[in-house]
Length: 96
Image (cartoon, rainbow, N blue to C red; front, side):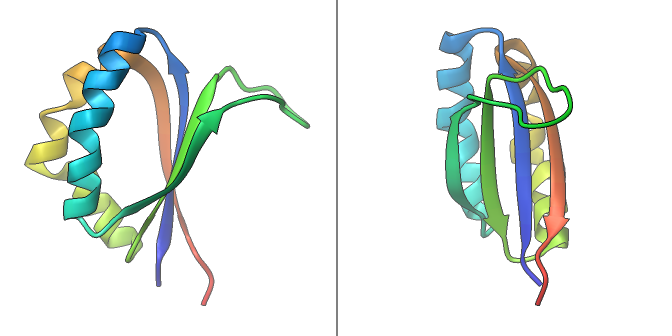
């Protein structure tokens, strides 16, 4: 069952974001993931959220998303990510 990884992001450092994105993209692809979309947050319809960007990627499974996040290649990028942004990542299993 495929899964979506959603990243809710508040950018802190645009230059570091470019560095992080250039390095993180290949790790997603290596894990079988595909970025479906990314963009600027424009409106919250209900509730409260403090973000200015988001990203959605599809992985072959929730396990593949988990393995990507915990891979050595991605873990090495976390210091750059943390300089670039505040982020919440979560995974949703897609229904059959």
